[in-house]
Image (cartoon, rainbow, N blue to C red; front, side, top):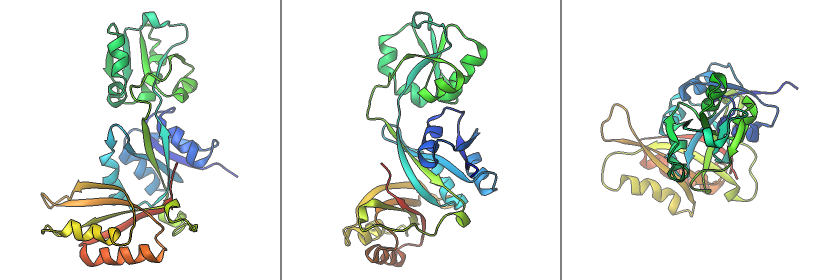
Length: 282
């Protein structure tokens, strides 16, 4: 059977590629993209069979752009996973640590390794568009005074050497990723198990800008003891100072209790849409 192809943002060796392997298996083919919008478009235009996108990091917070794309492209979420973010200092083979004077990486990665730079003031941190891309660049340019901060997979892919492992400040650093498919290839909703907490449902809704509107919307879940795992607000385009609310709750959409909660929400919300119902990730 031919392996699936999944689109993700970044270069080969990015943490998104690691997430794709977890979600789709080690044999998955990958299609790196420059922008997040390109990832969604590749799947929407049937150029790939799946897409993997980050949605939030435990330190940096939500990836707001991808919330907007979830609404715009209407590609259902079918699975999720969390990847432990391990930042490694990587250099071309034969370049010793003592020669490193510049380190390239994505600004978020650099800011998650500030203790390393404080201990090594001789090293200048330099922003780059991508973690794995920084390793690709230093290898292509043959830089002998520079390194990159990226995943172990990036070092393997580009034949580079890891000089220092796990240099991030906080070891509790995880990124949550969604697996997306086109609607015709996503089962309506996968078979549920008896455990409500084994499943997650993601949705988006809007309310009128009146006192108590959000309270009444969320009470649809609170009154039925449904646990909210995530809530995020985003500006509603075309309506200044009004908002979309993205919400994850633990439960399967076919569960009668969840059905009643969604029915209640429909009564008080101006607009709502289910973005996906999927097994809860690690």
